Image (cartoon, rainbow, N blue to C red):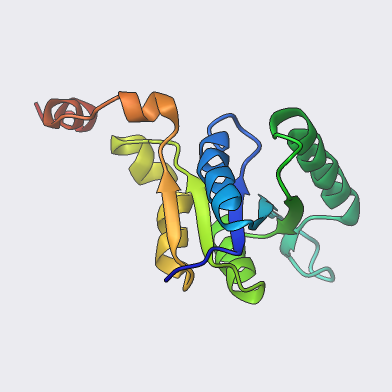
Length: 164
């Protein structure tokens, strides 16, 4: 039998990410679980002088701002009766999600998809898709309500890819 004691929910602080929280909240009530709400601050690459090493940069002040944004998101958008532990990490979203889930012994990762299709999906990629590939922990992807209602048909794909 599966017991979900530690649930990881990812967020990008958008309305879409709340769809994942709906599922996690249901699991949390059923299993008396803790919900860890993870926001990954994407690292920005910058050019640096030769003496300074070029590479990912996200300063402590930036992470403090991200933590404040996440805490505000929790206070404004989530029910107060849930046990939510807000967490901020810095790095590539899919890599950090998979790493955090494994390091902290999560039982499941719940994340919303943005529902991009066609060229936008090909160009932008999908954090959810990469997380599913990288994670050793089971990942439940959830479509937000507007995406659930929009059924994609073959004609839509053909039009998006301009082959008709």
